[in-house]
Amino acid sequence: MRLLIVLSALILCAFTAPGAAMAQAGPPPLRVKVLLASSPHLDAATRAQHAAMLQSLAAGGPSGGWFELLPTGLDLAGFEHCTLSAQDTRTCASRHLAEQGATGATIVVLAGGEGPRASWICVGTGPRPTSSERQTIRFDLDAGLDTASPKRMETRAAAAGCITSAGAETGW
Image (tube, rainbow, N blue to C red; front, side, top):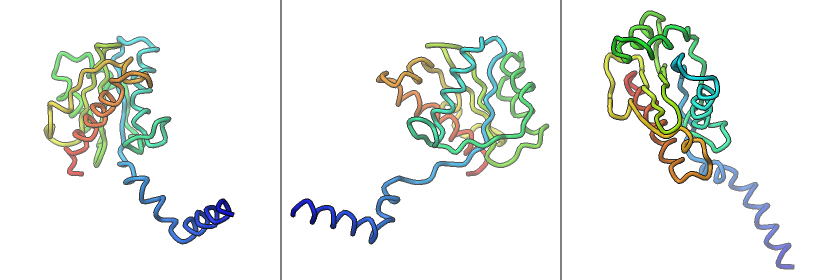
């Protein structure tokens, strides 16, 4: 009898307060156009790890995320060259963003390094970084992807902060 009462109450709550479950889900993810440009010196496996790290930040990813990642429509080759450029990497990426007519919340993530020496430089369409210390991160790529690693959440939060700070250049 008690089970019937509990089930009745649960069903009643589901029909009378469907928004309550939605409210607990949190805010919608930020919609952002992101291009991942990896150093051509990285092997295919490391490039795939950088891509997996970016995807781990996507709302549809295996552990949920911060962003709805959208395509940028930008040409990748010029940005990959920026990872090798003798010129300032950020200046190079900013120039390519302007040349390709990028607008709004468009971010280029310049990825380099592997394993514990991985790095990202996140560049937005603004004239200068809003938080240069958050837009250049160094991290352990393996720890960021390892679901059992105690550094995973910290690494993912730093990566999300890198993208968010670059997005702030556009005046989000």
